[in-house]
Image (cartoon, rainbow, N blue to C red; front, side):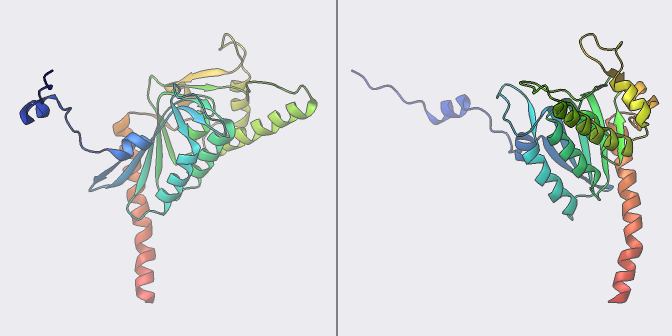
Length: 249
């Protein structure tokens, strides 16, 4: 019985897969930091379903709120980051988890810009309007509809009252952080002619802008220009405060 021959070192090197540089932030978080003379930007993707208190199957692409919330808190306090760009392509998901992320984005002091690519549906709408500026690609779409739920539903007046109050929270948030009126938003939510198996409305790029939901139609380059403009304005506003602080010392 003969021993199997061992491949020589050259053969091992040829058969081994090429080693790529580590890209931990992209692999783990769907995020990357870019540094230019105009500012340091953290780009974060919001994709798939917004995962809430329940775990979704491994076959479903998700954005986990327990990852995003502490990350946003750290970004807002970071001295290395000048602004945050959010790239959205989400089908919606857990309402309270999505609203929690949106509230945190809206409360950030750092310049923030969102760009809707593909879709910003359901709870993705508050996420899209939460930053200081919002853009949408011409081919992207957004679905606006009433609150829905899956699974067992207790048919009691209290249940419907709860859904009404939850929907009021979303309506208030969206109207506060965009140019759409409450009357128009509710009309879009309850429209019966636009969706075959549901009530609600599907808005495409220019339609979302015309209704005041999104600030402007744009591309990635436009989103960066908006963000760099906000960063420049933020820097200009902090210079007098720093000068006064230095004089006081």
